[in-house]
Length: 356
Image 1 (spheres, rainbow, N blue to C red):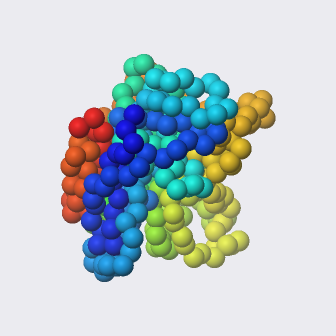
Image 2: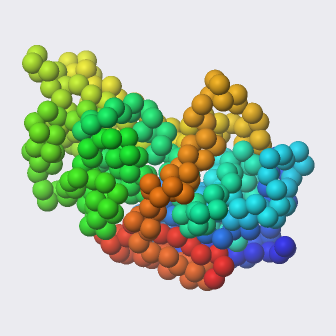
């Protein structure tokens, strides 16, 4: 086990670097994992990189990137049960309560044992490295309470949106996707979207309503961040409408999305729901360090959603290769940031290989 290892931070110019850092010490309830793969979330991780390249912040300290990865456990902290040295696990970050802890783009990571999940034998490290965002989408789909044959929109086809498409499709829904970028629209079509549309170039409302055979959407997922007053209104215009002119359906917000809109009569009878991360347990220090939530009361916990996401991968019902557009060795990890920022239109999921 190395005393130091490589990590990918980003500076105030939006540029990535490969630095060496000391391997963090283990606290009780945590595990040390030798990373094999880590997976980018372009929106959450690199939102500031786009802005920093336009408006640099020279005095900003370098900050580590990443919050989902997969590898092998090499050390167990005091009190850890249910995990073994050598076990293959998917990892995700909670809050960095102590310096260096988190599922970064780094060769070694320290994470709470409750935020790890064993990887099925048939699932590769690069697939399992996306399990955090897969579980995030699974929690959002549960919040939508989809029913067989409903018509569903996914607005924003980043990694979370891609998983929303696939899980909604597996739930028996008919799915339409909206996204600016061709690579993401192609990936969504491979994952079960029956129609994808380009905002800004295409009319969104008319083809979406036509896709629903004129009935309107039963549900929608908003899986992107930023201000979106116009988008929200367009989604409302696609929802089901009652004879008294009120919209109906469910809208689940899973991205860092904000909007201003009137309520009551202006909103009709649409349910707007928030889906926070991966489900119960996330950000709870007790849970993160291996605390137990009785399944009879908390069926769809963070660990259960991680488990079920990888089970769908292992059964061939989710093909993560459809989402991955680029792979980079850790030795060239800064180029992954350049790819995402400079060629966004042709980029979907991006994986870092920590064995290279």
